[in-house]
Image (tube, rainbow, N blue to C red):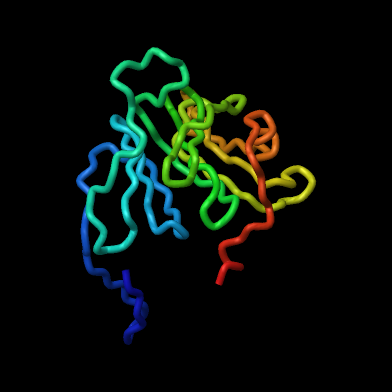
Amino acid sequence: MIAAWKRGGLGIFGKKVRQWDLVGCEGAVADDEAGVLFIAQEAKGIWKVGAEPSDPTPGELIIRIPLIRIHPNNLVPDVEGLTIYKLSQKEGYLIASNQERNNFRIYERGKSHNYIGTFTVNQALHTDGIDIVNVDLGPLFPKGLFACHTDQKDSDLCPVLVTPWDSIATAMNLKTNTTWNPRNTI
């Protein structure tokens, strides 16, 4: 997309450079440092796509939904939100909302994307969107926070729940880093 001023106001212009034909995608997160986009496809899993216009599409299905879903921690159809907790330029965690199971799955951010574990948030049901912040936000959130919405039956409301990241990190034996900032790497 290109934004440009012209007489009479701001004009927005764009040029389509490629597209993804992935049906049923509801979540995506960009990893700017790695130059990739992760896309959650509800029925298949998580795709990793190069972010440059010349990169091939659709990319690689890196985390598949297994055909046999007997283990309660498996990623199941209805994969939704994605977010990344960044520890450094290359390290961190890719987190996916496993909506059907009302939990969140953690994977390594690096090349292997190995499964690390699964956690839940009290009262989080049928979560679509998620996000995470790795910055000290004061005494309630000194290591950052994890945010997710929850579905309320028979209501149009979708409250956002916030959880201190250190409570999740401690329970899951994960690293934290509140000093890394992508703006300081230039």
